[in-house]
Length: 126
Image (cartoon, rainbow, N blue to C red; front, side):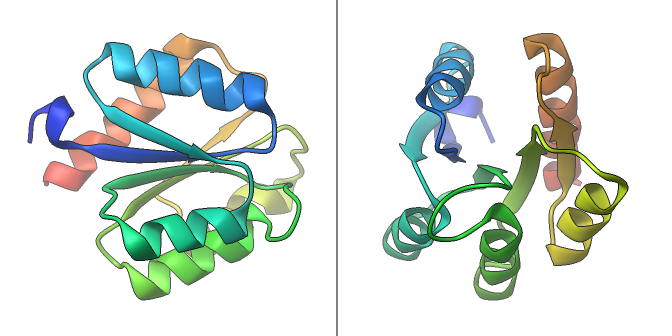
């Protein structure tokens, strides 16, 4: 799949993060949309096709771990990356157990994000 055929949903209650990631991924040819919380994201994925969801953990209305669990159950072919600025050793384990394919701690560089994102995308093609 070419980047332009991938639809990515970026979910974070921090507009600066969604804007940064949407701009970065759009510049690589991906089609990006954003949501500010897990409830809105779940509704968007239910109504539209997405290939990838990138979500924060701590958000109002529905956290990223709950969102990841629900998405993994309802859309098993969806690739999910979880990010968080409030890292503890259980965060990554909870995210992976919920169905995340990749995990990244905030703050991160775009280089680190891109490396993890590309690794996840290579796995999606395998």
